[in-house]
Length: 233
Image (cartoon, rainbow, N blue to C red; front, side, top):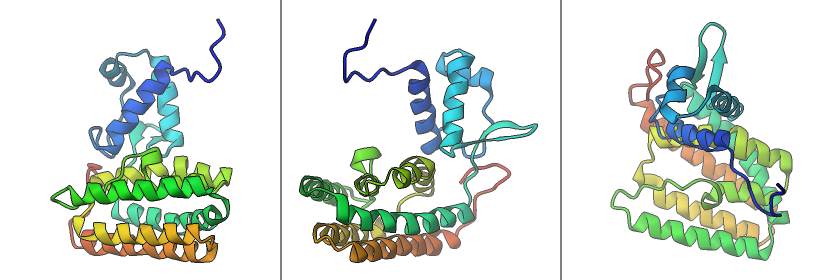
């Protein structure tokens, strides 16, 4: 039977992939833990075939790794790994912002401003001041990556790095004392994109991510680091 045009078919592997990904990002399945196929198949009520496909996709998203004689494991979170992610993001997202200034349409920029307005309301309404964005189109950085129009760059930022970066942010926590500054920095980046000033947009984005990295270094550097033997933050 032919599928109607425009209909997106979701497979069992798609569903379990999304469920396991969310469980890994949010720490329900702990960092560094071994993934037993029989246990996972029972837990999610699926056969080994769709489960193995989901695990392969999780591996390509850098959330799962396979080692000889150990099988599949959730990636281990480390402070050094977090800093490496920030360093990559600074370079790649800076480039994305520069390209977005050239490529984003006025309607896309207006949508980006509207998204920031929702984020400001979110932070203002949260007593902790935490600023943790929902994924995909509700994420400011995701939108700019998409707005770059560069398919390879989008693949790196929205697949290769995206969910492992969210895993770090979710499990290491987002302190509220930088939230308002981060929002202000986002606003300046949008202004530069709207003015078609790619050089300024790139510089502001790199400075923004560098400031977040330094904040993480100050906040987490003084705390006990994740126990790599246990793989938990």
